[in-house]
Image 1 (cartoon, rainbow, N blue to C red):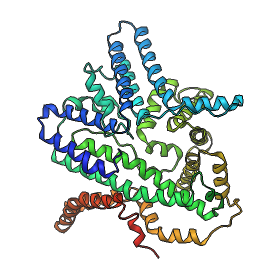
Image 2: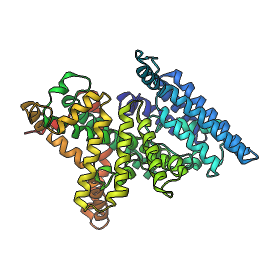
Image 3: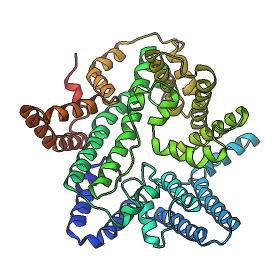
Image 4: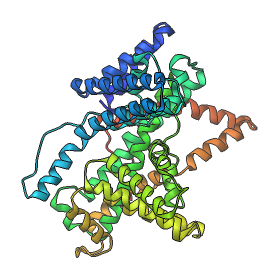
Length: 473
């Protein structure tokens, strides 16, 4: 079950919210925990045992660390917890990949174990590791109630697709949280924005990208140059709109019941450098690797060789985290090289417009590495983008598809900027000075969540694949 499904929105979420509202506040956490476990078990009850087991191990070692009498004992318990959790993650996510590579080196056939990856294991593994490390550092106090740690790791708002929430962020809110009418409205509005972003924009972009660049199908090798560029542009928009939509929905659902999750995406496509892009993209993941890998390795306060090593390690792990395939590793190292280039060569000397264009081009070509696991397809797409496919520059099919989706393209590009946020703030400021603006602002605020929910439901029901299709040349 995913957030962008009719079953979740109109069955699970409504049932959960009604129950949460009606029960005595002392049982709110119990409702949250039961709902989260039911939600997680929906995708595979057997993997609920993995989630509970990882949480039990982390709860146990966190208490041992806090009660340890010596630094060596504390460190030993921390190492054991990390080894166990990362070991579980590696078995489920990377064992088949590693064995397949060894088999290839030795000349044997591919090894297929049929291991199914538990939903959200990468997210809750990192959350639990951050919790235990923070206990070790003394940043948080170990939670003595196991079920509260389980609530933290299993919260259905974010355990499936993030953001990676630090325990210190919500530690006090697990026991004591207050919900205002503004929280409920903001949470509902944020959830509906995320739902519409996913159901209408991201899904529509995905349909265009898959049409132009079908993975694993011969059609990709007959695509024209314009088709490669247009397909990757829609994929670039899709992947931001998709990832950020889930964060929007998670933040919104959390706010509805008093949890204040930190922002996870901050308009990364307006960046003027790769470094800035990664300060804005998947912020919770970037900050995790910064605080728990990069800085402990020495960060940037070391000699050049060690700094380069630290960057390569972090970005190798970043690539691996995204998937068990070589293309993700290349994708991570690709960004590492540009971060080093900016550090030692560019040094922030590019003027604004050029810097923005440079960052977008680097990210654009990086998404080619991210999308294609097959190196043959990947190489052909790179060649096609450079006009080396031998299929010509354009075709009638690509031109028609472009015209059919031009308004979708324009709207999605705008949605990737902070223009809407600035306009909303500007109207809010004006509403404090002008009665007519106040009326308009109030009406928009009142109808926006309902309107977005309705058109999202229509899109998810299949009644309308793409509302922008009706506005075409």
